[in-house]
Length: 582
Image 1 (cartoon, rainbow, N blue to C red):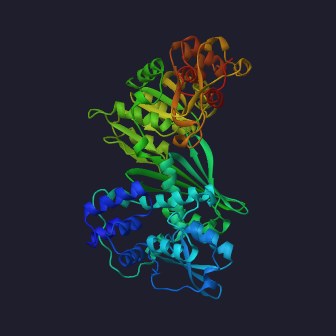
Image 2 (spheres, rainbow, N blue to C red; image 1 turned 180 degrees about the horizontal axis):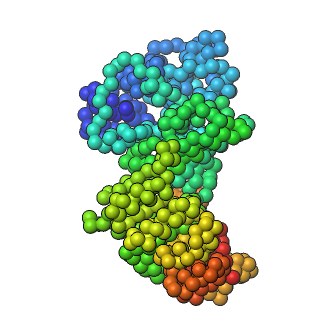
Image 3 (spheres, rainbow, N blue to C red; image 1 turned 135 degrees about the vertical axis):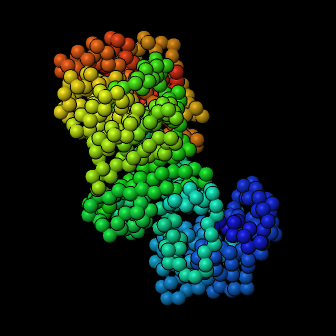
């Protein structure tokens, strides 16, 4: 429970006082407890008592305590100021420290390394620490020398602060409905586990990743450190490198979150959970993989607050959206959405289902996993462990009087054949495939063993897509693109005469990347009589693409170039995500 909530519950503050203190903290900075003391809303003794309860760690009162000079000499003024600590007592190789933030794993680790001693942290009110720093080290109120704090420390402290807002598990959703009941004061080992420094670190990384808009977190073990990277707007960024000593504890924490077997280290595992960061609800999918230096963990973050299930806002060009809508409004047939992992296929399908959803329509989905709950739609989670596969689910659906069926992915001949059978018997079937573009999807399905004539009679349209990064509007600046670079990329320089290109210089709003957010680019290949004849004649993807372009299909490169013309993206991003058809 947060400190403010604890004090409210104890009757030591009323809501108006807490709101005033939070506003004061926002304006003046510092910890909430420090501001409460400064505003004379609570005594330091009471604050110490409740900080100890909140953090489940012993408190210490520095008032009236005289600390021996040899103990003070153990911690330099620089370290004491940086981490707001006061050495209190030495017992052999153990040093007792009064700390304003005893859950700061990084400060404890740095002090342990710098002093070559075991650290026993005790919590102490920030205001009391400040006075002690002034008394023993001659520090003024400006106690933190920012120029001495490395950038990585700044990032890490921000991340640890973010942990206060993280709620894990089903209670992430129930917490908005009702407050958790007060637990008895008996000893609870699970609570001790949840407050450990490594757990704080993992929770803080997750909360920080959500706040930065990351789609994935990678925990990667190497010989001397653990590398933590976020994927933001489709690109990986290294965030920090904790010591390898925390590797197993971090993996165990993540496995517990995902309800996985913490004793299994030699086989890949999958898990999932739900978290709340502030008012944002996030589904987490976790995957472990044994590597040379331990288990790598990948965490996929699905932020519900960021998902917009509306075809009009995904990035479709007007003509392409018209073609896609024509396909999904057909009474029967197969509509495929293709692209690599992370290209937004599920969002496109969910948006289509949301548009098609009606009380008079029976929509059923077979998914692995079910990523978001769609109201009024029958969604089924696949479970290979009990034999519930896409193919088996599809067979069952045909006896459930469906109008529209969505299959998460067509990945084998059996699923493909049943989907075609459903389409030929009066059902609209939506699904995905992992292919690079719309024309190559035909050859991919034929390679699975699907008969070309079956494809030609059942396919309605194929939509291929990518997500490209948008230039940051806060720091975008005009740039020149050399004519030679455009020619090398297969782009006609004459087309862009008089067009201004932009790039982002990097700012705080875009995490210094120059990009902020992503938008979709799409190509839709309609299957008409000419295309059916080409499919039945076993035409290759090049011939299929040429025919589709003659009929007016806008391919992925052209869709990206239109975004470039409008100043939405950059030249480099167009080249990174698409290939020329020249």
